[in-house]
Length: 82
Image 1 (tube, helix red, strand yellow):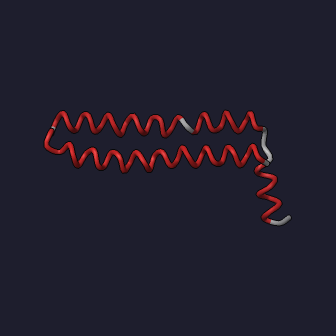
Image 2 (cartoon, rainbow, N blue to C red):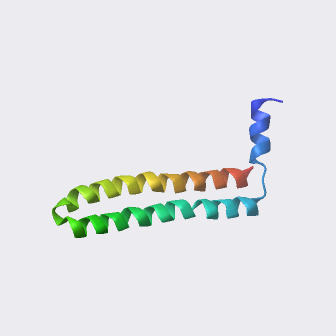
């Protein structure tokens, strides 16, 4: 059995199951974004002069966390297209 055949067999899953899997996978980035910005609010309340640095870090980490959600979205479409 070739690697291509193994990949095609792995992609053949129920579309409903793929939607549930993506929904569960989206919970992680949702929690991560909430934690990121709650930390920025807390840090700004404690040290207001660090607001600019904290916001810069927050937007960078927000982008990284959202990429995880987008990867899950792409994998969902790959799984349902097969």
